[in-house]
Length: 215
Image 1 (cartoon, rainbow, N blue to C red):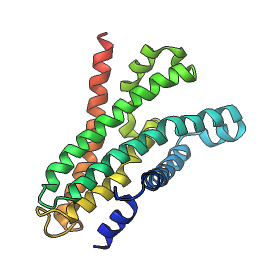
Image 2 (cartoon, rainbow, N blue to C red):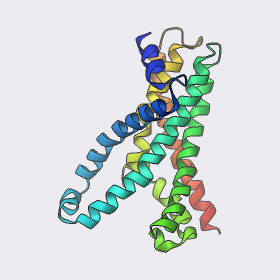
Image 3 (cartoon, helix red, strand yellow):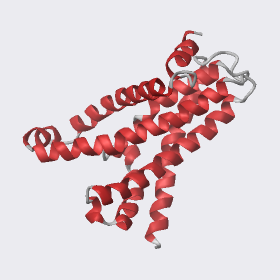
């Protein structure tokens, strides 16, 4: 019940809209930071480059603020809004919700990157200022994210904390998970769902690569 009370207190749709969005933004920032630090630490000489080159630091920070943070916030927003709806009806299947939610989050993650890449081409002159080039690089970039080879991997794995929180809350309230969200079965379901989210992003990105390679 403490978990559910925490969810309702900080992420309920009954909160003022501004407070709800602030809580989601704070959660998204806290989700991003550990993976961001891990990515910088793992990339050879990246820390030295950021410290020694103000331009590189500025562009890196801009990428995180204009790409990563909005994506994580919006995907979390979608997830928490739908989870709040499910919590209003305990008879709804948690397993069905989790499957559909993973698919929606994966699709939103890819689509938001497409939009942001196009906007970046217009606003910042990224990708040579060419929208078509921006769209063409989305697939190849995201399909390698699961390997943590680029910063998109940070954004992808930063989705997982918010995902786990919503799934725990929904499973606690569902009739088809009577043993609670921390039972062995529930934990397995959540792990499989998180892995599925990562895989679905990868498959959608590969499909996007194939689509634009034929255009």
